[in-house]
Image (cartoon, rainbow, N blue to C red; front, side, top):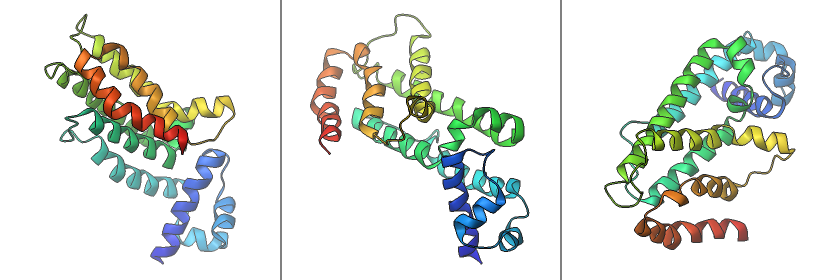
Length: 211
């Protein structure tokens, strides 16, 4: 029974990512799983019940990523965190693509999403500020500068899947994703920060293009 429920959840996530929340019906999920609608309804009486379980799974995965206790002492640690962000947005693409549908039809999920947005921005902002005394990043020109930088990086992360759809591509290029984020930071590196970036991060970005 647990295997069937898990199969339903995984199939639902895959279909939501492909077709969007609105366009997926129980029959589509049942067909994808290779079971009858009656069998599916035995485990989940409606689509909302499936989404609620997905929301719980999603929460268990994103909260460790956005934990207040998570620290990134070096540039490579932040690069690894970008991989965590990227993996999450690819696994739950619908969560970032179906913004209006979430708000209109699943307000609880939408409310949680807003909380995660604030946590992500706060996490990135703290990382930026922590790197000023380490002489990795320059001092802020004005008080809200790095808050705005954190918001810009959040926008790249959270809307990455959307802009891929707009461009008409479903290609998963983690290297391009990371490069776009790091390009937000290059202008604010100190000389020593730029040296660390060129020595450690830049070679990794180049490796993506050769894979």
